[in-house]
Length: 323
Image 1 (spheres, rainbow, N blue to C red):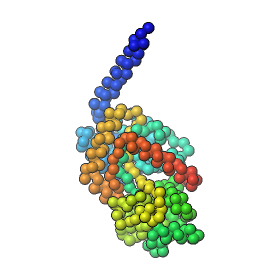
Image 2 (image 1 turned 60 degrees about the vertical axis):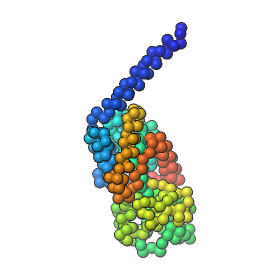
Image 3 (image 1 turned 30 degrees about the horizontal axis):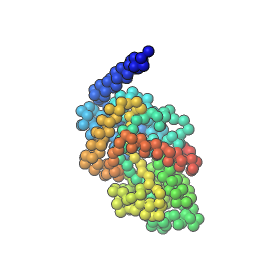
Image 4 (image 1 turned 180 degrees about the vertical axis):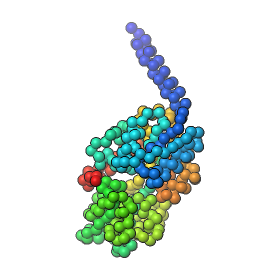
C-alpha cells in the first residue's frame, strides 16, 4: 500500500481543522468580551482591568466588560476562566496571587500551569518597605543592623500568605534576619497600626504605601526592585541598601483559557501592547503606582512559571499557612 494514501486523509483533516480555526479567529470577537477580576471592585486589579478593557473595546469594536468574582484570594475568578470556553471572549486579569496561590493551597479547582494561556503583561508595581516615622530606622541598613543585633522587631501584613507577608519573608531570608510577623485581616488595618506606632514595620504594595509616605505618615526605606521605581524616584532600591539579589514586583497580566486559538492570542497581544503605550493608559497606571509594560505571550508564560516556582519556595521555606 502507498504510504501517501494512508496519510492523505489525516493531512486533509488537519488542513480542514486549521482552516476552521483560522475562520473562527477571523470572526472573533463575535460578542462582548469579559475580563474576570478575582477581587472586589475598586481595588488596583479592578482599576487596571477597566483601563485596559476600555482601550480594548475601542480597538476591537466590541464591548469589553469587567466582572468581579471575588473570593479565596482570586481563586474563584481564576477557576471561572479556567473552565470557560476557550473562544477569546472570557479573559482573566491575573495578579501575583495567581502565582502565590499554588504554593498556599494544597488543592486548587484548576491547574495553574495548564489551564491558562498567557497573553501579555499589563503593568508591574513594586512593594515598599516602610516604618513608623518615630522609629530610629532611617535606612534599610539601620533596620537590618538592629535585627542582627538581636532586637525584636515586629512587622504588620495584610494576613498570612498575603503579598505583604511573602515579600517580607523573602526580604528577611535574603537579608539573613528574623522579624516577628503580626498578621491582620487586610492591608488597611495593618497600615493603620503602622501609622499609629503599634507595629513599627511593613512591606506593602506601593499603591498603598506611597500616599502614606508622601503624607509623612510612614517613612519609606526602600522599594523591592533592583532599580528605583519611576513612581517613587527618591526612594532607594533594596540593592542600594545592601540587599542584593532582591528583585520582586506585584504585577497585572492578561490570560485566556488554555486552548484559545493562537490567532486570537496574538491579536490580543498586539492590542494590549498598543493599549499600554497609549498615554491615557500608561499615565493613569503610573498615577496608581504601576509601570505600564507589555510582553510577548512566551515572555509572560516564562515569567509566570518562574513566579509560581519562586513564591512556592518562599512559602515552603517560611512554612506559611493560610488563615
